[in-house]
Image (cartoon, rainbow, N blue to C red; front, side):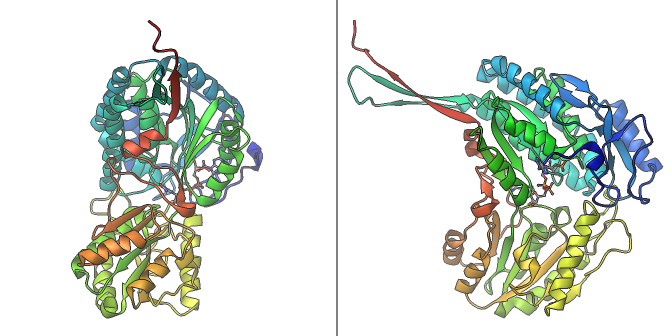
Length: 530
Ligand code: NAP
């Protein structure tokens, strides 16, 4: 499972690079990689002077190079330009991060809830104060349009604010005793050291959803962000230090994912693994958590249906499905992956939806008016192309798009495909790109059967004007989240998570806090003695 540095071969374009020694010439993999343009350079210079362009890992409150001085290059997917070289860490650095986290746990967990709350609140304030710079970082390394990136900062920061408040509301229980000389109590205590592994599609929010409740509960954390988007995580960690998160309570290591993952999983000091990412990697982590019986929370892949019934308001259905499908260019776990449309409204919807999709603006995320950024890398483009090819070869018809965008790089045209059926790959697997497949259905029962015919169970959307139907269908859908006449439903105040193979546990809301607690029962005896 462990890859040596030399074996960390490039997978796609210039996005995934070999860990390279910073003393040697950089091991660039693709000829598409370029030096930074003036625009990107001025953004990154501003970020550097603000102290937010961090490239070292954070261990025990200190910014540290990888021990063997190897680095990974972080690229802008819109241009292929190199944004930064960051430390490429592995087992040794992770073990040190775990040790510092374990030590910090002894004091952080003993602070009062009010003290922890105030630190988190200061972190929230700093995240909001730096929302522009953090948004620029997200656009630079992930590609999403700047407005959407700044929206992610607001969303990501909201978890820190929410859990700063919730820290003070971790109540236990007093249970009526089963004997008159006893008192029975329930305490909630922090789990301990948490390993948090996060993906590239929300470089900030997937981290704050985990670190917020963990720190609020008194846990300490070792975060491993995606090697594709470590810069936002490092900037957020810098602001956490400024807010007063003590050394060791929050560590960030990035680089060799299997090595870091294995070290976190092997350590008996790490009591919980929380992961957001693909179902395949989530299953591996779950299996590897067994020998040390760690708690595990998993936020995995989806295959969301957006179901448009004949009685839907057409405008609401188009607007909602557009938002659910094309946010982050289709690269979210809750993106509508299948658009199920009832017979009677199918043609009208196909036309109105295609018209709306045509208005989407593809471009560099820094360009004013852009609504669709690039896909994360060449592998993502190849996946989308192969899914579209498969659908067309089996009889689906492209209404719009269906190919790489003329901008080149990893830009793909917003695409609508009709006559998609359940035997096509895009009906079964996450597309993770800007392609909306329209699937026809006849009855409500058909819609529920098709929607539930998948191993995934994260988000589903329904569009109908019938109150009765909205209840019936919401209850019948095997999904953790359901949007009714609404395409964007994630918020810090509601529980987020999947059923079936989309995951375990919930993030956000009061339920998200439970994931970081152990419940301790205390039985006090001999209580009648004078
Ligand atoms: P991924 O390949 O599973 O990667 C996720 C994280 O796991 C990254 O930090 C990655 O590191 C790391 N990783 C990969 N292999 C590992 C290993 N063997 N041991 C330990 N860590 C390992 O997923 P992704 O492509 O980044 O993200 C897209 C997926 O995430 C989609 O399936 C999407 O649906 C899912 N997602 C789910 C939610 C949710 O809340 N349910 C939210 C967002 C995304 P490197 O990147 O450094 O290799």
